[in-house]
Length: 398
Length: 225
Ligand SMILES: Nc1ncnc2c1ncn2[C@@H]1O[C@H](COP(=O)(O)OP(=O)(O)OP(=O)(O)O)[C@@H](O)[C@H]1O
Ligand SMILES: [Mg+2]
Image (cartoon, rainbow over all chains, first blue to last red; front, side):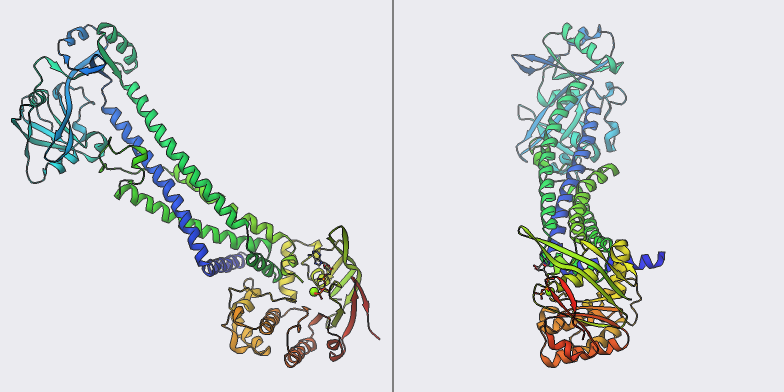
């Protein structure tokens, strides 16, 4: 009995395959549209997922509190002397001065981000050592040593050589030696970054002694970030205090808005697809209705007819899923999700060769399947069911 | 008794009135009978065949096939009954256009039976209807009469006990019609029961021993002497 059932299902499967083949043009076009939708959904999901992973990374390296001096609404250099006022505030673990800015390379027409800090003073965990692919951090005495991000290495051709020079404001050249390179996992943060000692950055930008661009403040207890930030504001009224939760919030708002926008577009596309599928399927052509009627007359059960429909849809949607997901993976990994980047990030903010590690949770895959395969199955099986349950003779005429 | 109809009534709503397509039909058919049902267009012949074959449910009354009431059984049992006991020949071409002649003929065997030997059987039956060379053709490549003969061949493929034929020779020339009727007679002599619907009264005359009925406005009456 069970064997007979399997044999019957195989026959039904065979019939489904051959009927897909008989309508190959139609089947193929549905397959393509279906795969495209899954491709879009899956790419989008992978990109947003891996971007929020990146965001977490960025935040992990963001100091708990950043201090900038403001004057006339603009940022200006902050005197190192301010450190003394901070020393009195309870709960601050460490204050690390930083000089950072942009460097426009007129030869290569590229923008670099230069960051100089007292590396040896950074607290454990906030250090960038962990993100190095090779080499090591230069020690406090090692002048002229830097470590660089991936696109800097490319731009400056640092494969063959280890040294390069940048112009000071007075157009004299300052030489650097590469001591290490950031891992590509931290691209979003380090891609265009040149990290050096505070003294080297001061030299490069010609910033007078006693001034830096900002302070990184690390606290003993992260729960007290807000309280400490308030205390700093009171102690140093001309200083802008940025906390990590604030940055996180801004980031989430921007990111959320962008991905929300993307989701709406995708949902619209999905809805269009469902409507299309429904329309295609519910408007069973007279030939299809006739075919169902003939099969019924010849002794096929309603459930057999539904089973052929079900297999057909399952084959189409299964193939579409495999195609769409594979294409999405290739798109995200090898083409860096180039279709979505304008929506999700904006070209100017991040480098075009940003390296994304796609991550896809099983739940996401299920969600995508639920939003595509199930409506499609419903849209194809239900009309066949309606057509298979009406008296067969009405379709045959007489 | 292989077929029994009791007080069968089937009406269709047409505009504001109800058309009695089949009106209180009582009929008993024994195994091996050859029935010819004559009637004008619209007299309810096709409707009666659909009721007997369990394709349409009656408004009231019952149809028994081998003692089992059609609509008292599950969809599965009814389908199995149709598949194994009844061969349908429809008034209009009922081939699936995207399947070849051979595939169309094999459709009733698609599952539940061992396909071994079924191709040979199909070729044999095709030869009997004079289309041995058309196995690979598609319906669109055949004439109306040839398509009709393919559906006749298909109705015989699973050796049914009953053949329900709706104008089986409607679009055949006299010569081919004779061959087909000869074929019917052959099967009938081996015990297959036939219910043949037609408006060609000559057909009744040529089929010796046939029980002849006429149908008028849904009412069936015997023409037997
Ligand atoms: N599905 C249907 N819906 C509405 N009316 C129907 C339907 N099928 C048949 N009828 C009506 O029932 C009556 C009998 O139809 P039926 O098809 O049984 O006639 P017939 O004897 O087979 O005619 P013909 O010789 O032209 O094939 C006709 O008046 C027809 O209009
Ligand atoms: Mg008719």
